[in-house]
Image 1 (cartoon, rainbow, N blue to C red):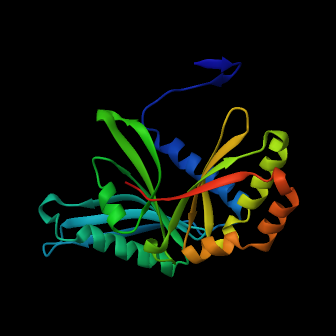
Image 2 (cartoon, rainbow, N blue to C red):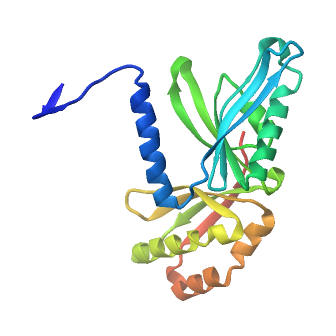
Length: 239
């Protein structure tokens, strides 16, 4: 397809040359943007007594983060705990490389329950997978006990007379989360801007408590006085 003089657009199937070029270009772009240049592959291979592949895991590490691409156990060896051993080996190697967190995705017909049992937390889902299935995204800390994680939903109402000031306040205090081991997973806002919903995760309850006591957060709230947002916080867990 000609889209401009001398320029052609081709829609193809597999294109190994294009894949390699895009991988190189985007890797270079990502490294310039983040300063992290330690991207590396990660794999775990298990073979049986005959040397045949029995189970395996592939993934990556980069800039203190790790990710799992694929996990597979041969049908005749499932139910023997090899999946858990693969995860443990990958997590240990990721820690050795200096990673503090790891992520993975799993279709609903694969193993979302498996990852939850091993301390991975749901961070998102994509509907519309063939057969009515769902793509689940998971995350796990490699430095804190997953059982200590606190997940919150904050329902925030901004005074009608101070919506912009309330939004600026929320911008500022949400930016304080990382210093206390907190992360903003989702931030949603109503059309009129008068209310927000925040999904927040803290690595530990102590982190949540230190956030509440943060002097900067308290001072900002005091400065707003009666114009401060009214917030209801619910502690929640995955079902």
